[in-house]
Figure 1 (spheres, helix red, strand yellow):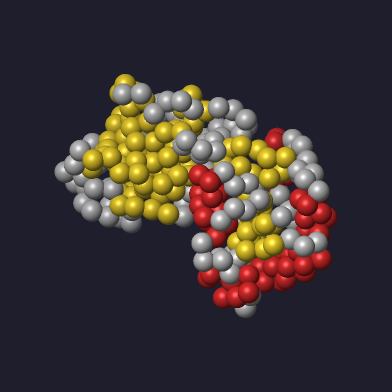
Figure 2 (cartoon, rainbow, N blue to C red; figure 1 turned 30 degrees about the vertical axis):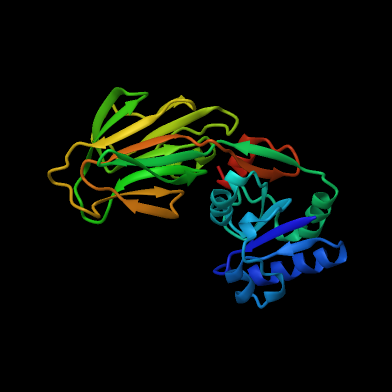
Length: 284
């Protein structure tokens, strides 16, 4: 069995967890692969693979929090590689292994005692000067928002080429059901079971009593135009993917969001009730 390990170098305790994983792998003849940066940082050059994302691997494991797992999904989902997370972060909605159960869960992995949940992902594009550019994919959300001290934005929102609404707000969150418990929830969006085949549009601080979040079908394409381009300058608006990667939006850009051609494949070890997990994690 070949497993790629992605420890978060900024997380306290990641090195200790990595050593436990390596010890287990040596006992059960599992081949581990580490990316160059992580391998050098944790002094395991013998495990470094320069082309890790082009290699055949059975699974990838992140060591960190949900953010670490999200980044790994964006890197590997297009290759159809299942991803599992060891949680040393805060919430752990997606990272399914807690530090006290590492060896037990790794034993289940080598015995194939797990299932894979497919989660909808989004792809983001920018149409600029007549050319459509692929920006990237997201597991949780694509967010278009103002930067710094820039003014409130005036959006035009079209769904499947039909202009649905326009409004003034600080931004718009386009979320998957997986991401409905993240930024979208904080902005007043609905809680959506990850099994629902939909996309959530949640405005950020809309200047209206009547603008509310929308849930649309996963097959529908969302297009955004920023109407107040006269007052808009470079670096006053940006687009972010899962809050981790971003690009600046320029005047006259059209932003296009749609379902990605590939899902995130997240390893699960047992059936967990989504609502119970949500209540427990957010201490409601």
